Image 1 (cartoon, rainbow, N blue to C red):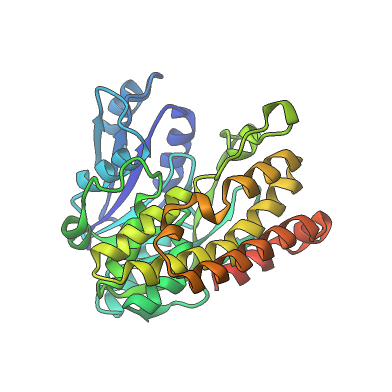
Image 2 (tube, helix red, strand yellow; image 1 turned 90 degrees about the vertical axis):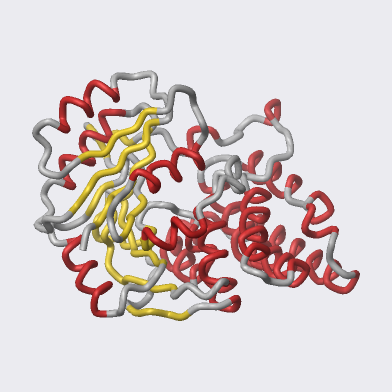
Length: 344
């Protein structure tokens, strides 16, 4: 079985090179690297062209002449792939353990080649602390209920594993610009009958570091001064849109799905983000997020029935109370456990 590691690239070539140096430690032979470069302004093309001459695995490289955005670039990396399965990765993520791909392939073959799933991951500064979105190693199932329960776990792209023929079947530019195209695919594939699996191993190392530093993250852009205040949504409106559209294209009832997606956002995602913003010194950002995600400002809320709207408002106020009253020190101490609970 051939496995393609699909990497959307944009600048930060030093992180990509370190990523590739770690990937080269794999014992599995049939690996391909598919890199889509979103018109990088650094020396990515020169570095990858030179590396490809001697690299352990074949590298398929494409550079867009102009910047096309995250979603289109991610999709292009998957389009470039010729493997039976594709594993999505960031350019500053890499593989954990030299047998990571071999062990994954063994699972996929043993379980009759399921369509879509994900693995766990660790952060580079703490390999012992697993961020667990997969709680078992098994094929979970398919259908609307399964998709509703697990679509949130596809927000982090690295470690998402998709059968290439299934990607080819659902590939579309419809969700480009949402920055969450992988969530659109997950909702559409699983709700449409694709078998979803979990792989309870940390195959991915997130945010690799060079000389003790990692690439810029969302923390570097958090709003911290009242003079910068403006309502924000943290991309959650795009999440809602991408997921609902994925269910729509799978044939689901959009009103029902919109209610369930908003309920999940307000029960789990928004309070977690509000506390996380506060824990990173951005109380202003938390207030801006709470304001920007009022139900009345969300298109999918507007199509619901009156009773559903009342329930969604209750969930919204619950998320605000939780997000601002939970002490930050408790959140920091329990963050891995809270993350695990949310993903369940």
